[in-house]
Image 1 (cartoon, rainbow, N blue to C red):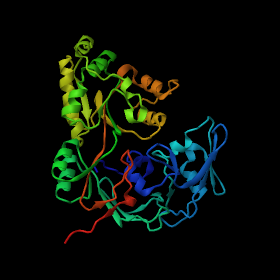
Image 2 (image 1 turned 180 degrees about the vertical axis):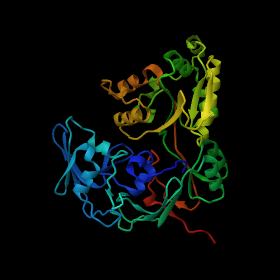
Image 3 (image 1 turned 90 degrees about the vertical axis):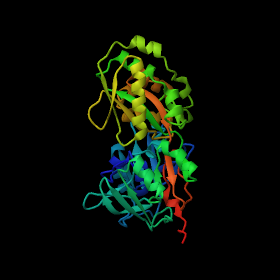
Image 4 (image 1 turned 60 degrees about the vertical axis):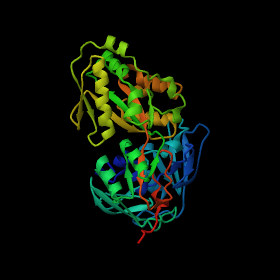
Length: 404
């Protein structure tokens, strides 16, 4: 994987759902239709106004250290929600009606865990940690006592901090069974007869401005971008060009946000602003190529953008943010947090569409594309069936024997 995870703690793993799902469980999961499904909670119910929720825990579940899951342990993990234990039942009380409580608990940041004597988190997931090198490597062993059935795989080893080129080489040389492929590697893999898998468009790629760039310049940059050309050439028609935060397959209304280029108006808005530093992720070849093309588009409107790799301060950043929920309202709230728009998300609105319009006013964030996650699968991988959003289900995967 490209990311470097430095702590196997749910607080950090909330941004790495695939890794978190190997180690930790939640009370509830969501199916591909976005409907809550039983996980550590075998059943649940709520009162008439959805302020009090009761979750009955699945019996016989054990943490990786052998200790049993209890309502009090689950309540400790969800203390910030005001969770309490009443016998074998977990109770959550909300001051406001919370009809989406079950769906929310299926999202990142709500894993159930305990702390061992050293303070390290211990989960109930299908795999347990057998070796850990922060930011470099983690080795996992099958949880023989997993409540959902022992995984087929005896173990999983994940190497972190591997850029797109390194992963592509690992794939070509059969050094890895599963890799994250860049869009540029997809066609070559297909031509070579290699197996690939593409998720729904689950990553938002957007420009995020700080307060140093004025309204007119932000709007001019937004109008200068030729999304259609970038989508066709650089993205090889993968994913979708967009001016919306949520993808069409989730919201149903993304097409209402116009994404056509208007270079004439962009030129009329631009007033010879000073050069603007535009940052992007140095490990992501896609964002680098798009940042460079956006800079070319902006130059046509009379604005100088200077793409810059790394973490140094930049007035605008090309940010990639994951869609974290199959519920439009919860997904918008998570995106607002990831993009630094929490305060704007509090604006009153009756629908997700209204919330999204409020978030996009002023062009603080300029959505560009919704991108899929692409994986290369080694020839031995069998039963690869992740969720539509690309969440791994490695406990169901197995490897065919190597040929002599």
